[in-house]
Length: 250
Image (cartoon, rainbow, N blue to C red; front, top):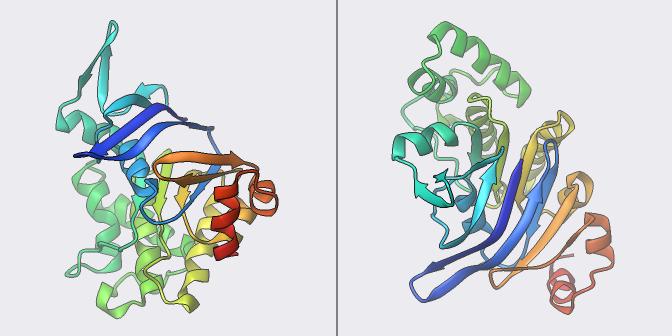
C-alpha cells in the first residue's frame, strides 16, 4: 500500500531524510522508533504530502503521493488534488488538535460533512459508532476541555477514522499524555491493528511495537539503520547504534 523509494528531504542545509526505502503491505503495521530528530515525523509528513520530498518518491495505493506522472516526468498536484488523495490517509498527531468550541461528536462529523458531503444524519450515526469503537460512547456531547488527554486523543483517532481511510499514520500519539492515560490509547490502536487497518506508527512504546508491529524500523540521523521482525530487532539488534539506543529505553 505504501512504498518509499530512495526518499531524501532537507530543510535548508540540514538533511533530515537520506535515501529512505521501505514498504508497507495492506493490513500491515509498521512501527518506527528512534531518537528525537532522527526524521521519523518528517517521514510520516512526507507520506501524506504535508512535506515535499526532495528526491525519490512515495507511492500510496499505486499512485505517487502529491504528484501526477506523465510519461517519465512528475508534476506536483494542485492543492485540491492533494487534498482528495489525502482523504484516504488518516493522521493522528502528538497534540490532539480538536476544535475547542465543538463537542466530541461535532469534531468527528466535521470532515465527513464538509469534505465528503456526507449527509449530517448519516455522519452522526457513524460518529456515534466511532465513539463506541474508541470507548467513549457517553462522551459525544462533551467539549475537549471536559475530557482527559487520553479521551481527547481517542476522539482524535475517531475523527480520523470517520473519513474511512485506507491508511492510518500515528505520530507519537501517546507522547503528550500522562503515563496512566497511555494504555487507553494504545488499546484502541491495538484494536485497529486486529481489525486489519494498515498503520504506520512512530512510537516510543516498545511494548506496543513488540506486540502489534509486523515490521519494526529503527531510524537515526535520517537513515534507516535497521529493520525487521520487532521481537528480533528488540531482543537481538544487529547494529551497534540500535543496541545503544535500546539500552537506554528498554
